[in-house]
Image (cartoon, rainbow, N blue to C red):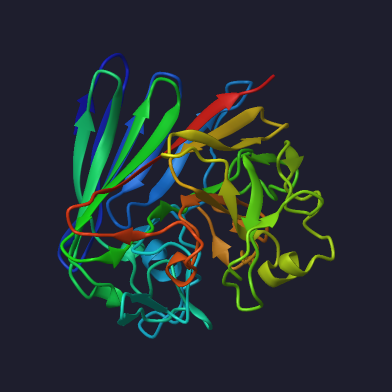
Length: 373
């Protein structure tokens, strides 16, 4: 089925397998400028983004798998039900809480809550079975300016230990400005914590083309949140100036990644949250920019969130065969996760992630692709 908006904007829908009797659908969002985005209603996964380089040659610029079976086997973190999981989260929607909650614990007032651990020291990306593994209801959407898919999910009270029944919607759209926009909305019937994001891995030279270390990155932040040896925030906001974490100007991702820095050793590279130069109240600001000098492809990320997790693909170990048939090795992709700060419920000085009944959680991130000379 093809649904068209103005001009050559179109959304195509097709079957992509099934899970326990629920049909999985793949949506392809396309514009007239050669941009195509493939999205699954399993995990809200962005499977592929095709975009031309400066010579007009198109390539998929995000990491992923070819089949639903591979996503189910390898995308989640290892757990009792799936000990072979690789924990890569390629392209997935992340919730209820992005990145670590220390010891899987948090408090709301006098009440303590426990999220099932799926790493040695914390509950990562919402616990053992997060939003990345859910089948979302999906509906194609269109307007004169964009085409997209709206995904929705009802997370019951107590799922993964989180309080409150949560109604969440995530809408992806593509427009003629080569923007992939993602907007989240959520409401809860009881006080809860919430921190949603997306986990696209980028390689602007094309997935499977090798390391991203020569690609340039700029992050609009003067500080970041250092982590303990257990990979959770210390609670400090440290300045980036004079450290390997200074990306205030376009800098090659690999330029300082091998420096003898304790934080880089803990993360096996970059896997930290940057504190963005956000407005008050928050607005859609430029959070990061990346350029691949070889292909000329450029990425600009805007967000309404206060934080950005930059992950340099440190734990890709050459064990996964990707979308194009090549093996993914360390540094073959990078993630930019717009978010609230990790472990915020356990750090009163961090921006609050509390969502009360009667309030609406809302945030937007846009990924704009382009070409530089």
